[in-house]
Length: 472
Image (cartoon, rainbow, N blue to C red):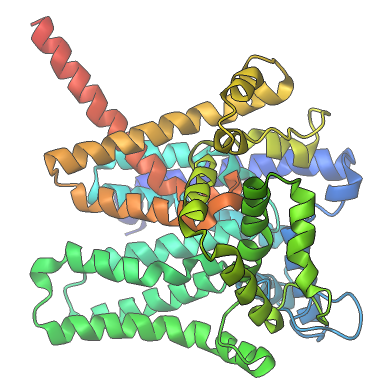
């Protein structure tokens, strides 16, 4: 029985093992670098906890363990937190409550990251081909950003695993209507938990429901059953996110899950836009946008300040919607091509050089073509890291767009999946917007790799056939 099971799932098991081994090797190397050799003690002395988001998640989980509530405050009074969503801190809290040390939790996290590789393979095998799925999964095993951050206390790895598991189960057709209801409820609950990890997933349900209707358009009757399926899916989502929404309503009088969208848009996107539009230093723009919060009590990043955020958004965008849209689109472009090498070097300090401050999207907005050319003709370690990290993603993005164009023109059998995957990629790119960085591409990476391999396969067959005709 075990031999038959292994034979049936041999490729999935091997992909899982390879992915886990790669992540384990990277973890051990980083442990040696940070902990044993003591590099960068100011930022990584508590590896796998790092500064920024990582430290916030750790503090939240520690306050939960110590009975101080969901708060980032280091000491009383413990102010309730409404910026960081609870999904990942509660994951850390749950396993620490069971006695798991943080390092063991990271190994569990890396196992889930390896599960993402398997899910990528299963999605590709179902909707594209086994060969394309295998190549894409292998590429994801060694994708630097996904591997690097799977070894830190960060939410990305678990978020992507839960998201892909929900998507895979959602599109996996079951024969029994009753079983379909159970699984779709589970899909909703999983997606709800993903939303409680990253608020960016909040608007995915309509996209998934639309894609489901297109995929199974010939099996939607009787409509009562289809409505019931979508209903239990939505109920699963609401049962998970509902309690947190009610918690925020009781504390702040609003049903929002997090203040994150308001903070990112108002205190990051809009200052960037204002500085560009008014041709002033970015530091001055930040001062202008933080000024309205001077009279507020408590943290700026709180749902208690929702009216202030909304007024800032309204006043900033009034009469500037098209100008902002253009700015947003151009600042989103790095999502597809930005490298992660420079940022990983900043975190690790392996090459001791100042972080690169070059911003190509700003140059593009200013139409500073000479500045862009000068950046690429002035050799430096940062330039070499940029090229090493960006060239593969430029190729991946180009092949994805080629696969999309080919599917639309030829109306291929994979058209549905190519279109859904492309919308999924664009969804994360556009909602990330001007604050984009390589880490925010992690959720889209499995689909970008699948479609890039599909595009490479199509291109290879086209060139091969053309060569055969020229040289029979």
